[in-house]
Length: 562
Image (cartoon, rainbow, N blue to C red; front, side, top):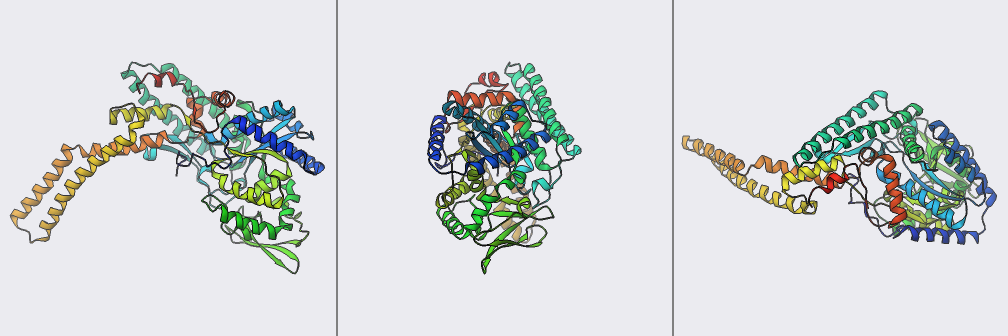
């Protein structure tokens, strides 16, 4: 299933109408938190440890910029606020992943101005997630001529392995992607140029900018590839290069597989209160029983994965006998059996295991929010269900849970793929008005169904004749019926009708697609994308409305009547 507007509208949970509303909610949470007793020394110590993992990531990525260095220094300040977001390191991440960093960045600036405090934007990379997820190995570009309206760039990864246990894509794969994208750009440019010439519109100068932008982007890709050793680092390094190098944000990155080790005390707290934790998880999954929530048997599951030597993970079931707390499970890939003894039920310890564990979806916010004293979390539409469940558990365990915002607008713009689809739509429908697309498609389907029903009636007559003993006049009747079927298809231009229906389906897919970052780089420009997102937040600030982005083809699109 593609990332379309079917799942784009977020429910009221974790949504704020405006940036100002979000800022006020964060300030209110901050002021209330000042009245609660907090282990300031422990929080400062964890942030100091986090700073080390952040520095390690950016040094290895090559994005330890002056602004990142400054942000790392802020973590040592007791008064510092930490705003957090997180995501899997997806292949050529789509716009929504990167847009979270923009909202976090702007929110940090607003909070710092309002409270006169240092604020740090932290981006956690879920590098220990499984390779099975589509978006860590697949990226989409709009192409109306292809099935489903997309060109899919993909890398084959072994199943049920952690992303950080799989090597980076080969240079051969990189070359193949580059060739595919260049071919796609060339085909789209040729198609759009041809249509524009017929309309008296010149886009030659824009074509040069498209090629130049792609080359600049690919330089980042090659830079990330050289630095990376694993699949997760290749994808994560590219995200950092865009956000830190091109956009100049002071967003700090760290790998979850590394920085989760600083949260040993938070994990132990959940184990020590496991009976309550289990009860509240059960209630939360029943109360918010929706698709996208946590594992059905989460209430029986230890709140972290254990990393197998094969590169996969084991889900651990809790066992409590004679005052001892044990986690028992089997690797999901190789079947290796694990039995982890956490010691006393009332005072469990995980020191010997801490380097080989990773939080489960529901426990990520529970340990990070309280361990780092997070002031706001920018989430994604795919995680809002388990975040709601986590909030329910946190409130009942007395854990900190800051404001959470899910910002998922549609970026509306006309790039090469979208313009090509618009021209196809114009040829099929005779109109530029895309709002009529559903009506046009319904009309064409009715025509096709009418033609097909006439052909089917004749086919039924043929079957009746075929069931009889063959006589010479019956054979002639069969030939006549077949000829009539062919005539009906020809008069209705049935093959073109069927193709046009498929093209309209592809047009719809293109117009509703959430494309990968390459589409933004080529059509809008990487730096320009950030500037327009920031400008929207500062000037408009409506978190519930879509965003119109200006592209290199903005003036071209305006030339066509609506």
